[in-house]
Image 1 (tube, rainbow, N blue to C red):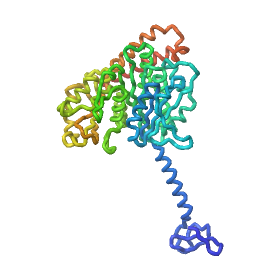
Image 2 (spheres, rainbow, N blue to C red; image 1 turned 180 degrees about the vertical axis):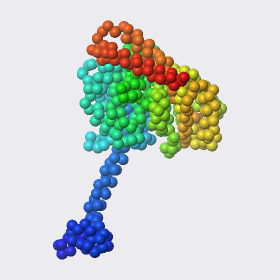
Image 3 (spheres, rainbow, N blue to C red; image 1 turned 180 degrees about the horizontal axis):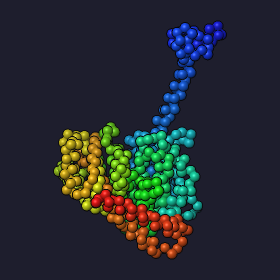
Length: 452
């Protein structure tokens, strides 16, 4: 340290020997002389930098794109956002189609960093009164937004966060959701190559026009295959018509349907429904597993709030989930089975992981003859009921089956309007469409090779 004696500064070594200021080593004992005040200032500065980094760390980022995607993220944030630490929530909509009045958005002061849980809205700039009805136009909208990368960085998507999962929710029938979603994931991967990306894609209803199914097919092809590989590590396909028919039961006995049911599924996947945060749910692990095997598209099957007393066992609850898949599934081609079970604490002793795993293995063997991998993740909640939540994700079914309606609509739409200027009216070229078809066919062909 530095001390003063009669206006003359001297340096003191660890043994308290005085030396002239500026000395590097003690002339008496030879020990190095340390300026403790300067070192302390440096240490405090480093701690401040680290605190700032940790404060901004976002392990889970939820992004809703397009009108329906924004509604889903808004619903999830209101229901579960307060229990998810180190997370961030963003809604992205086109400025001409935004329904800001329907969203409950808390805006932080502009001179402060975002703090979790925070929900914000980003508007993609567009011409006044212009409609974004098709995939290509939505993609161009996101591509032309000069503020998009900065917005994603401020959201917490950065390469320094090595363990990060991005959960993107979008309906693929509209132009903004179908077109902007793949491009935004492309930017996410560019900003943080370590991120694991999970997409929940709402597929159009049967009575929607062929243009909506065309959009969905184009978007799926981009999620599955680009020059840099798949954009989505995990792609959960949710058929709108099937979702409308499924019901669940919440912790208070209330009926869960539509957005609330999907919100509950996402909560289960990210471990929001836990007792004190103790959960094995890890969407990043699911993404890593599916990417390593090359299986990216999954069909969710839900059994939310099933009474163990009524159903009699986990095997019957599994059957209940499989009986109402949220997208078409071919049991013969299923290669990956991911099961997340949520049980109340008071039932933990009777539903131990070893017992559940044995029942699951037996059930898998009876239902999926070509299964190559299965994962069980068990979590506990503080609920006092006997109700069990089960989320079953099945991967390996070809997109020709799970997305058949989108492919059929794509082909019909293409044959009708193929004579018009694709690039001018729809934002894509005939070459783009050929590449999209090849992307889907290539993914299905790889699944066939794995199955054989």
